[in-house]
Length: 231
Image 1 (cartoon, rainbow, N blue to C red):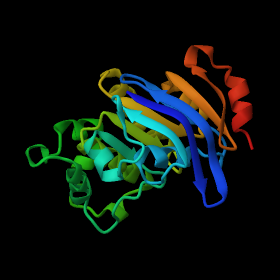
Image 2 (image 1 turned 120 degrees about the vertical axis):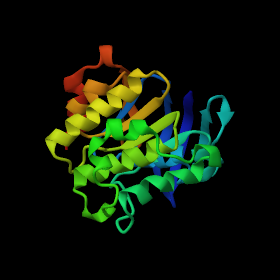
Image 3 (image 1 turned 90 degrees about the vertical axis):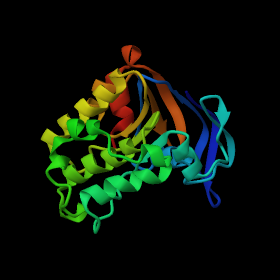
Image 4 (image 1 turned 90 degrees about the horizontal axis):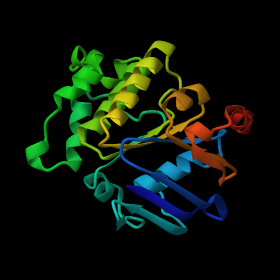
C-alpha cells in the first residue's frame, strides 16, 4: 500500500535521510527503529507531508503522493500521531476527537463506537480538557483522534514515550487489534525494542539517516538490532 523509494530529505544544507527505501502493507506493522536523531521522525514527517523531500518518491495505493499536501494525504486515508501527542490542551476530549472530522466528508463526521471500545477511559472523560489528562491518557486520545479519520495507513511516532507500563500494554493491544483486522497498514517508530518486537511484522533500523538493517521479524537478530539502538 505504501512504497518509499530512494528518499532524500534535507534541513537546509544538512541531510537527514539518505536514499531510504521502505514499505508498509495492510494487516502488518512496519517498525522504524533507531537511536535519537537518526531520522525516524523526519521519515514520518515526509510521509505525512509535513516536510518536503529533496528527491525520491512516495506512493500510496499506486498514487504518487510525494508532492501532496498534508490535508490531501489525510483525505487519502493517511493518519499521523506525532511524537509528543500534540493534542489541544484547552479543548475537551470530545472536541479533540472532532478535530478529526476535518479530513472527512460530512456524511462520515461521527465518532465511531469502536473508539470507546479501544479506549474505554475516554468515554468517561469526554468533557474534560485534554490538558487535564495524564500523559498516557493523552496518548490514547491522540491515537483515537487519528482513528476518527478512518485511516488506511496509521503512523505512530514513539507512542510509548513517557507512558506508564500499564497504558503501554493497553496501547500494544490496540495496535495489535488494528493490525489483525487486516484493513490498515501501520508504521510504528519506536526506541523501546521489546514493545516494537512484539508488534513488528517487518522492520528497518536507521542510523545517521541510512537504513542499515531491515527485514521481517522472523529473521531479526534482536541483539544486533538492540546494539544499533543503544547510545
